[in-house]
Length: 263
Image (tube, rainbow, N blue to C red; front, side):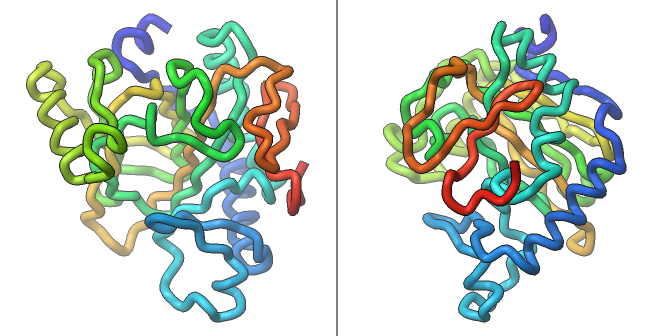
């Protein structure tokens, strides 16, 4: 916990069983072939898998992230609330963690430097939740190195106060990334690459600066599952926007009430 408070992140090596990871990705592949309500994140919107399945959307979806896989996957909760992750977050929160969003990646996002704190506003909780309690887990679902886009992290970057993308940069992401990079440089914060083996987990603070590494070997995937959590009371129903909190042995997960096929 001291490392997390100081550096803004903690690494857990080899904690997730490979068979569990493989089962999850087998399920993802099946859902992509069969589940029309599966959602992909597009810039400025959401793409439903039904538009892919019926041929309405014809572009490649392999590099799009899946949003909310927990709504359909029976295996995902075992990863999202893996005991190693849930135990750590429970100790930090002094409360069982609640997952408010998941993102499933087949390739590196190559997304520029950013903090999640004011970017993560899922329907489950809306814009109003304790953003100081925001945290994320990043599960390596295969080996990751510089070739397939290892994460770029900024140790200690959770400490400085930061401007926000929406209010201070009017949504100009390029300017926002440049600002964060300069802020970290001026604070003496040096970047590091997080190289991972399958089954490793990285947990970071919600205001921790990180980026998706460039893909140097385009033929290689970088399978990963990212989950965002907040410290919510057991009675807190969230924003009430068609999402229901489900209880699991190690915590809670918000799921869509309509169309949820996995419990």
